[in-house]
Length: 400
Image (cartoon, rainbow, N blue to C red):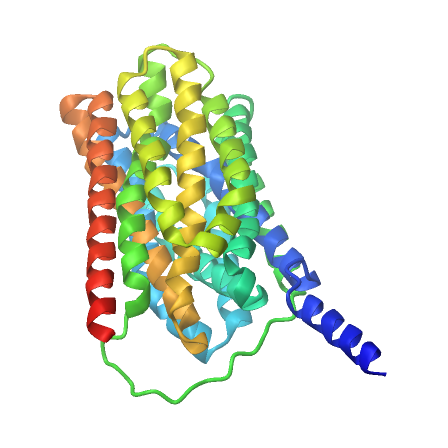
């Protein structure tokens, strides 16, 4: 009898530690399709802006305004996740994303595109904040680093396919048809997400703060993420134009190799974080990103381009899931939505600052300077990380 009870308890524990549940699979699939639609527009929006008569500065503004509108909405999304529920925020965000991307095909002026990008950022801010929070709810706490790594694979796989498909289709179909296809991918995500059985998070009575726009415990990893995603703003916005200027073909292979390197890193980075913490992954990952920026600033041929892609994918893929798991680790359950909002706000801020700043830098000094400045940003992230470690060490000594 006691043996049966032990077996039952073991089965129950194993079930509670299971990552790949029905609902987790659905959120992974939904995330894949919306990210695929988004990643297809990422390298093609600059080409579309160029077709409409825009220069490097305008490309940076059009790319950056999207991330800044998402940034401004994420704190409200975080609050809504706790007050309105996960389902409401996620479906609304996906709906706005679908309508805005589908409307890109109607654009004939940069001002109209500018307005639609702001609306797209609203949908993106709501949907991605909700999606990350939903995944966090569904993953067992003891396997959160591993689970977030698997969840991130959906976005990485979309990144492997999206830019390549987008750039290929842009050469054979109209931008209108391309953006409509991207919108249909978002609609697929909306349909899948409507079948998820969302976990209800009990509301906790807390003192209301007038300026509650972030989760304090998520600030250290989020600030580190900012300095790293600045580099992504330079790559996504200007690498296709930079490689074309240098006469280097096969830019779509850069994104493919980068994404597969991300996929590879996800197979071990999450578990490494769960076992040894962020100390084992952050500095090695950041150094790889730094090396990649150096290679891109040099960029003599396709081989160096592809090498930079693999190194960047391994570095960023090692660091990003660890930082996201870190950002929600210390937050209470009723603040996970705000912790994810804080994390993704700094992600958006980094991409937006990178795109806008590098637009000016590329216009004034040339594209290679973009990646030199991006390398400085990575160095700042390492310095900040060492400062955070030193400060946390002093606080631990004081507590003892």
